[in-house]
Amino acid sequence: MQYLGEFLSLTVAVSWTATALFADSASHRIGALPLNLIRMALSLVLLGGFLWVVCGAPLPVHADGKAWLWLLLSGLVGYVFGDYCLFNSYIVFGSRFGQLFMTLAPPVAGISGWILLGERMSGWAWLAMAVTLTGIGITILARSGESHRLTLKLPLKGVLFGIGAGIGQGLGLVLSKIGLTHYEAALAASGETLENAAWAMPFAGTFIRAIAGLAGFALILALRKEMPQVGRALHDRKGMTMAGLTTFFGPFLGVSLSLMAVRYAEAGIASTLMALTPVLIILPYALIHHQRVSLKEILGTLVTVAGVALFFLL
Image (tube, rainbow, N blue to C red; front, side, top):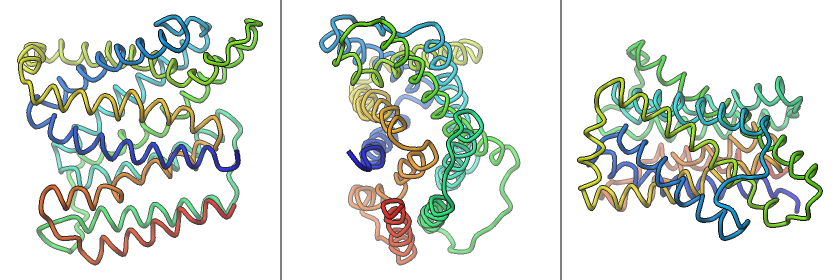
């Protein structure tokens, strides 16, 4: 199907919009790091159950050593390093600028895909990426209740965390694609006819990534001596409900579909379309928090839509 990867990427953006809304509530109730650990654990349960029903085994049994290596590395880079940097950038200067630095992910994915996979994006694709990211940037910078003036005097610590978050997401996506390529080769080499295992492969890849994420966040919490916070979080019924919804739309559905998307589209293009969350979240966020949508947000949305449209004219 033409543009399958692009349509999947748009679906991921919608899923991650829901994730952001639920995660915002959950992180305020139970804390960012405990939430990350809990969502990794819950995602393993959901993914294991899914694989058991679809493939007959709760583990990605057809993945070889190379697939495990690259997917675990992807989990460390994308989940642990990327998300750790992202949440810390929020602490330093808030989600408004944190999300701005996440627009680094698509070009990082495009460059990484070129270096590691030999993917080449056309000049038109780079133009589409630039227009889309410009629209996202306008939208994010417009979401401020204080001043409409842009200041570049940002704390260096926050800037470094923001850059790390963008690099982590972009590079992690490409490493996932490499891992799935090895997974697909191992599945083909098995000589078995396993249609279910083939289309469920992105979910199996996400399972492996989640193992790395769980181990990484557990280590961070242990080193910071904050593991007791997880126990307290488990007794917060509303917080756990929000964590469960965050897990379903994030690590279970959204991340799995993102791995499926990069099988059918260049990593840079897929990553750009997945980065639409700051635009898609405007309306539901405004309705939930009873906020007005500014003219700059509308302008940013229109520019973003124009950029997305360019991808479908390639």
